[in-house]
Image 1 (tube, rainbow, N blue to C red):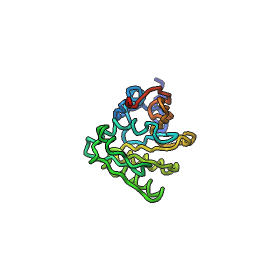
Image 2 (tube, rainbow, N blue to C red):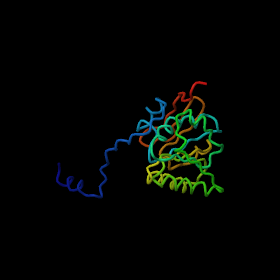
Image 3 (spheres, helix red, strand yellow):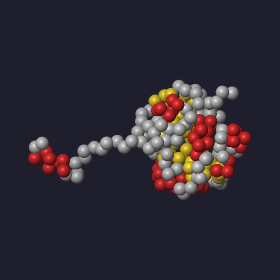
Image 4 (cartoon, helix red, strand yellow):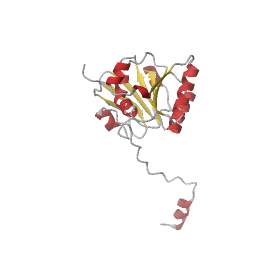
Length: 201
């Protein structure tokens, strides 16, 4: 190689690119099509996942149940912050979730909701934090950083209208009947999955 080129390549100011790191193993989703589409083979850990829904009851919680059941077997807790409805204990037990590992947090104001979620994510004592809110971009960044710091899986439920806005979340997923849209996937690519993750009725 020419001497001048070699000297240039030794200069730290010259960006030479990096080999992409192998994604950390994710928590299996229980849906083989979705696992195959996610870089870590499951829900990304230590990061924020956004789930966008047009309305409640589309199966958004059922989609998470296999992972939550697995995480509830660990010493860390699963926190639900400001759920729109009271979690139905018999259904959670039926999904294999250990209720002793669940904590439900109710907060008085939207700011308290976000603060509570941030503290839970950052604590290091939570395997997952589920949150129902419409945070600003500043709060999205804080939640993503808190999830990284506490090695927790953050799940933020938002309205479908948020699809048009930017986000710091590592994964953005829109849930529709019989259809999942990967809108953003760190280390992967957006795609539409025509699949069913719901248990037969």
